Length: 606
Image (cartoon, rainbow, N blue to C red; front, side, top):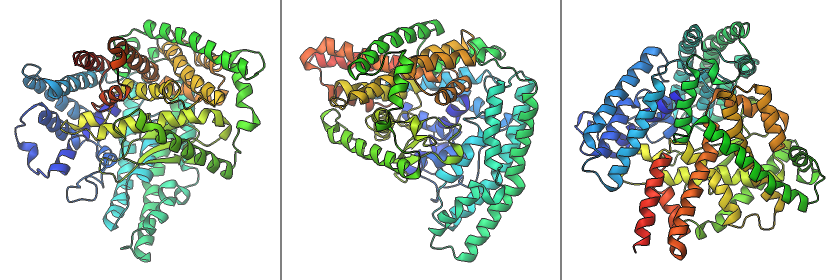
């Protein structure tokens, strides 16, 4: 989480250069808080060539200095960025809050919260696992190189090869950092080590010639007209040679290190197992939820929500004639209904993707009635690469590039189509697409006259809370389940999933639950398969607190809407409420409350 936020901030401000052409802007004293936040981001931008490429805008332009490089993963490089951020945070005090109002005051408050949160977590150097089954360079960089680095001409193809060579360096740097972490008591649980090993071994199993970093290249090079056959062959040969000499040996060294760590690793699942683990978890909860809720507060909220949702789910299953049993048993009965299954074949997987597209069209046909701004960025539905299916979640979203060069993408894990029967897909599509992540993240990119920090949604409770809120309004406002009771059951199961997360995340990290105890609780209360649940619980083990953001954020937005509806009565305008929430960008929940309260007061006085 710390690395993710540092990288996110690192890329924000170079976009100012790209959009203004102000080549010497870096050295100019900024005027106003917006320019100051952009300048700080610019100072950090060179830390993350990966993020700059991910955002878009300046790759393959005259301002492109980075797309043949990867970031510095050494301890010295991280400390350099952190010291820059410390100074930047001190400087922010000179720009507010006195004398600011409106959007500038909101920008100042958001930036203060964001910088303070990063600094608070970064001061704990040994606070998480650098390489896991879900994250770290062994997972993230292959997907970045194959899916994000664009090859559009000879130079970008050559820069791809340069980045392959850089990947070897990055693996060496991370190998040293994992050793350092181990010496300071940071070793993943045995089951995380084994899962990470499965992914690393699978990645290099076929050798260089069969590695996705090489096999994905011919089709990409074929689209570059200025390359002749000889040039394409040379680039392929260079790529295969680098994968063979630099990248595979890097993975082999990491595999050997993880195998050695596995010999002494224990089975404890929670972050409490690390030095100062309880304090680390409090920081993670605060960062993920943007609240001051204690682990007990969140745990008890989860238990209450599980009880409420259970009653609603049981009522639907009673009405549908589902045989009696525990909640989990009854959900499993519906899961196995043949009429709800897609064939676990390439044809069945394509049928599922076609179904998702059709449902998204249905949602978009109703969107105007509930939203003022309809984001224009396209959405692509894409299968998770088969080589990453074992460790990937059921689905996830990647936002569009700011320059429009890449659409928003919903990645769905199709390893086993039985994991996502037909009755569960509408809610998954709503959460990841419209009006969930795709609406919120795309809308934020449209906001004008604010720093890029406010356009890139780095607040988990807001972004995930909005997506889960979207699932609710699909039922209560948009009527998308009026003729689909099983689809509504899917909505409730998805909400139950997020409520259970409050219980198991705090259970693992604060109440010292075992991995097996958390798995049993989740299976019992969701009816999900053991494989699905195991992937989820192992995710929570390596991302403490993140899973609590969803339900915490949803409940906050629902609470604010209820407050506004009660105060405004017939004058409450749902489209205007959604415009307020979306078109100010993501922010901590405490600041969102301030915004909604001010808006409600202003509406009441009209």
